[in-house]
Amino acid sequence: MEINKDTLIGDILKQAPAVAPILMSMGMHCLGCPASRGESIGDACKAHGVDVNDILSKISAVTKK
Image (cartoon, rainbow, N blue to C red; front, top):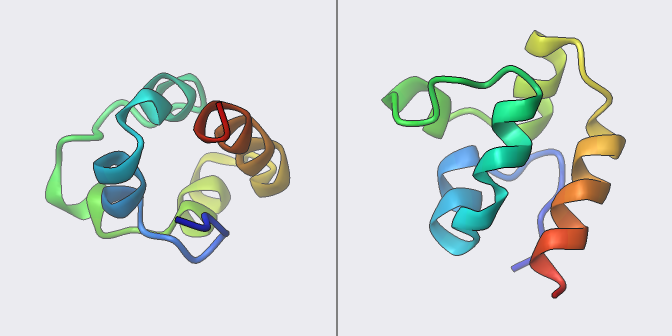
């Protein structure tokens, strides 16, 4: 699965649950709520004031292992 700024958080977590700690570290503490799962990683980064490219790099490091 290719993960980019438009990928939904729910889809990411379904494919790579090990990414959860990365998302939690950026301030996303409600990963179980339906709203967050339907949000794109780009929108979440914007809402939390986080650089989307930094998060995508961290996610890639976990999912490429």
